[in-house]
Length: 409
View 1 (spheres, rainbow, N blue to C red):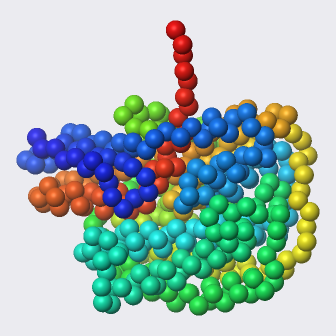
View 2: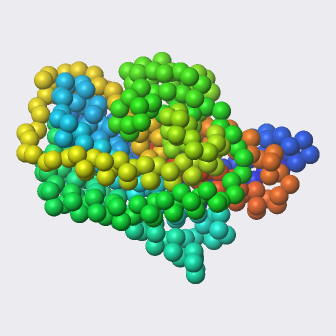
View 3: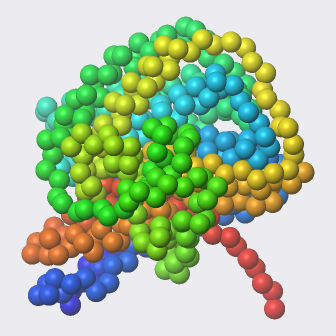
């Protein structure tokens, strides 16, 4: 029996470690334990008892990378609870925010975390010659994503203008025109990104179940599985089960008792936008590249139709209620669930995408090891890390939800 330990998985957001025990002769994996040791951050406990007005600002601080996804997801859930219906203009601006943040996150992962693995570099900073052009392409696309969030949200990280009921500041016509031109300028860079990732040689690790929103939107729709199950956001507890794992600060989430994958690969499969993308964990990177192009096209479409006019922020129709939103963050489905009574939050449940993916990562590693078992231990380590990075995990998000209870005897 051999054992491989990866004490610190590199080129991911957050901290996790892996322990695998396997038998080379039988090709059986006896132990596969992916443990998240990111410090628990108790965000649910921090939000509970606060005014509904504070929820998006607190939830958005769960992560600096996924901040826009948490900001908008929490806002939508609060608005559902309090009966707030926003205008089409607000919906469009929120979608711009989410799309800009999403393709900004995607290109950073693709070029700085994933691509070096396939080109033989330890880091994107080591890329030389023609390969250095990949880094420049990434930065051009990334900057436009940043600019969208900055123009619409007031600043590129943790935007401040998006609030419950609308926006405190609206972008001007000139700003939006500049955004469109910049998007058009990087459209070819996005296409080259897809072509680049089509040329990469991906190992085969098939994922059996995928979940995503089914309407092509990142902000609304029902959840659909590849196996054909469809459910509304309000039914999520009927289908998704959370379980505390003593060895990890991230829970495990199952669908119908089994692991599943969320994220770009799930979206392109569930929404029938395959274009050659297989149900292979490693193809998540190609799906991610495809989404960069799709996001840029959708942003251009929104800007073509958007005519900014001054609007008042919508007020709550009531101060008590329950609201659930399921949106698509860069890494997959994101759930925000709140109960509010007399303006104060009485119940909070937040399930980020990486929490949903952790158990599937373990199952994928178990499936992958027999295929690479004849490699050296060092090569096996590298291949396993490459597999984990295909999920683009955000372990900081996954470790926020454990509640702290002190009992004095």
